[in-house]
Image (cartoon, rainbow, N blue to C red; front, top):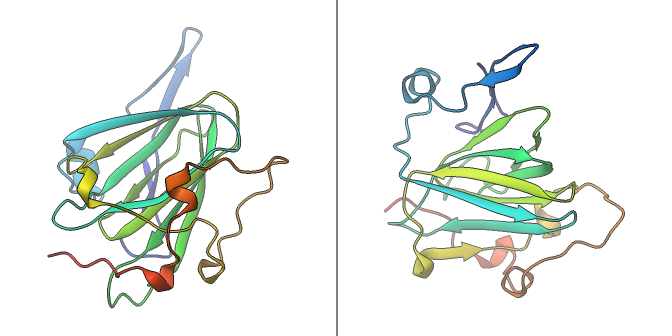
Length: 184
């Protein structure tokens, strides 16, 4: 596998190797020892999936301490434009983001450490998104901020339709209104 360090410390883009022949292909999606050797030493305890149509925006989300989560995300079917925003208190890259297209075709993954808000916009109908978490979901620790906050400078791709968000995500606060993430 190929591991690409992003412009923000800790966020990594992973390109798993794929081996194919006339029967199809094989790809190892996760191997704890290999990922640990690549600097991803998370103890994943929960796997999640979402299925969405084109134009759906999910995020930007994170969980407050002590329920914070690191995530390893990928797309099984379809495509998304995935974003991780640094919300770590005192971080030199606070408010900056990393964005990458994840698709069934490119097989890319992104590792998002604790202290980042995460979200994506679905680029194709019938997209199946999968992610591993290193902590269990806790509804009372669920946090979010506006995906379209101008202060973040995120240039979401034009997809020819109006984005679809949950009522909860539409009501999320802006970066200036959140408490920066702190590992407690």
